[in-house]
Image 1 (cartoon, rainbow, N blue to C red):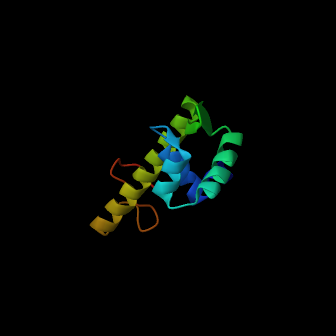
Image 2 (cartoon, helix red, strand yellow):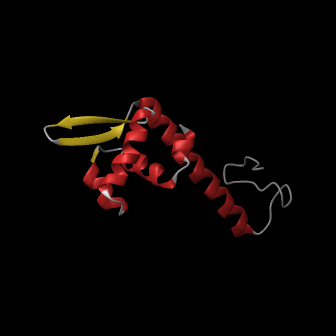
Image 3 (cartoon, rainbow, N blue to C red):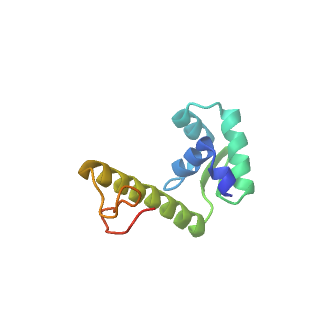
Length: 112
């Protein structure tokens, strides 16, 4: 699962489907990828149970598979934001409370 999300294209597709279901053409347009390449990535993500598909007539719409995947994505995005804020805070102040290898983030937790 994490190997699939390690690919920036697939991660972008999953994040696009995170809060709203998307069609293949919407994903292709937003990512500047061909529809066949998007379909390939969607098949892999669906097989790994990260995304689900809902069919309405000839149209297929993709969304996050379930609440577990949604929580995992929320945690990943939150961690990246937290880490980026910590890096920005230590760079802006120019010094750290624990020395150069262990800066503090804005929440006071030591970062290693």
